[in-house]
Amino acid sequence: MTLSRRRFLTGSAAFVGTAFASNAWSNSNRPELPIPTLIDGTIEAPVHLQLREGLWSFKPGIMTPTLGINQDYLGPTIRARKNRELNLSYHNTLNEGVAVHGHGLHVPGEVDGGPQLEIAPGDRWSPKLSIVQPSATCWYHSHTHGKSGEQTYRGLAGMILIDDDETDAMDLPRRYGIDDIPIVIQDRTFDEQGRLVYSLMEADEDGWYGDTVVINGAIAPVAKVPAGRVRLRLLNGANARFYIVAFADNRVFHKIATDGGLLEAPVPMTTMEMSPGERCEIIVDLSDGKSADLFTLFEDDVDEAEEGIVSGMLGVLGSSEVAAEMPSLTLEVDTSLVPNLVPLPEKLVNIIRPKASDVVRVREFELTMEHGGGASGHHGHAVMDMAINGASMDMNVINERVNLGEWERWRIRSDMGAHPFHAHGCSFLIDQMEGATAPEDQRGWKDTVVLDDDDWSEIVVRFDHVATDQFPYMYHCHILEHEDRGMMGQFTVT
Image (cartoon, rainbow, N blue to C red; front, top):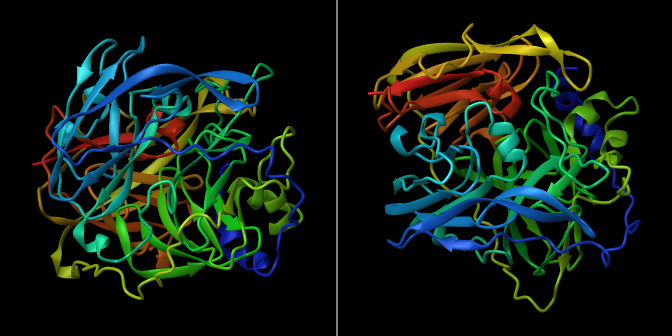
């Protein structure tokens, strides 16, 4: 099965007004939400980041071998600031090479962390990044050629939060880990010994799907939050899954930011889709003192549900060891915490879109999958050959050459199913998404766009940093197994 999003998009109203069963679980025996350590990257001292092996307890009493950055699983959250330099210092203590990409950062190719910048075992890499972009939730993760999927799956990922003066003046929730909370959503599969199960060769045409949702490395955790407005910085850190997020009581939340920063105004929502690699900042109001249960739904399950949207919702975790009714995350009100009760601004930022006359070039990209010979995936399908415009990723080939500072229109589609398309070194604006006008919550600055085989998605983009033949940028599908199998190209900006 190759994922199609159409049925959910046209049938999402079926969920409105339906609430999940509640109080069918106990919070007392659920883990506390892990909050990654926050590191201040706004000072001149380098941020030291050690790539290492670890042991992490996803399940009580079981230690799972993992990879991590400064910790056993995932990495610290790094705080950066517009118009200041972020100095990073990676040390690879693993027995394999690792490239680490700053996903969403507007930086030159030589410090972008593409596969050409692989850090050999025992070596160090110390990029100096000039942060020139607005406030945004970005992230860093493995981008090792042919191994991005496995290394990210085992834990090599973390968040980068960029602040600026304009956002500081808005009184948005900003107390890290209290009312401004990083939420890394992933799905993982475990064997009988509690070890992570992953194989690129066994992944089918849709990529590698886990069967259990983990939030910041915990299964069904609880976060204690104030009885006020809480900001969740949601990252779809999955290898391949498209997610739908919603609260059990159908409460309205407000989306305030996309990949590259704030929207022009808060967008009220009750359900929200997220593609792999995408970030969404939302504000949920808990001033009524009631806890809120967040469900993370596998969009492919919802799409295939024979009994409609709600039956797909109830299959959220998909794990026989966790009650299906249990939410992925519970926000539990703690009245001892001082709440943020400042109303949301009606206006956030101004987004200036280029005029049609500003766009000097149109490029087209088609993502293709064809059945190859040899091995089969874990659903019995033959392994797919992946390409963009007929070419699979070749480290020695530059596929496109872009001029610095010029607006371009990129038209992108696939020949089979839905894909999240990501471009390095920039944020772009979506004009058309799968043949339709981009929805209101997708009209901010982005670095991922969803496309399918029904029609073109179109973005307008400008690159303001240099990427050379030696250190080019990448464009690729952000289903990591597709990327690792060749659905990726290289481009320069000069």
